[in-house]
Length: 108
Image 1 (cartoon, rainbow, N blue to C red):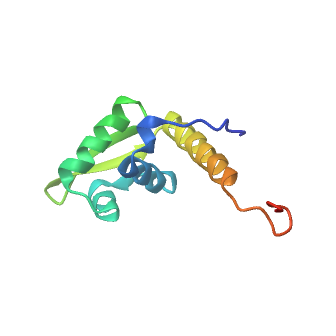
Image 2: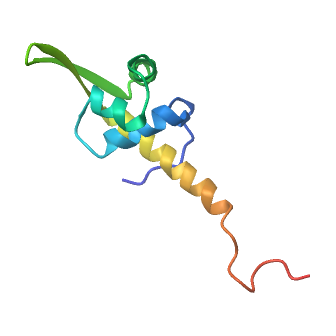
């Protein structure tokens, strides 16, 4: 699929960008694992997840396990597409700053 580079302000915040990167590499991930991976508190992660969920970029699944409620996170198809387009735009922007090969830059 050819993704059109597109900057996404919902995804761009560092925490949400990290969450999307983690979820893009898996079918789903457990809340605590994501929290620990990006080194934030439960409340900070919850705020990021709420914004991603409101944009329809993630879905949450709650499941009881060993007498405890666990929350699983997954990117939706729209979330995967938005993340890929955002990464494509960041890549495009980064390429604009790449140094020129020797001999092709400023000659003064």
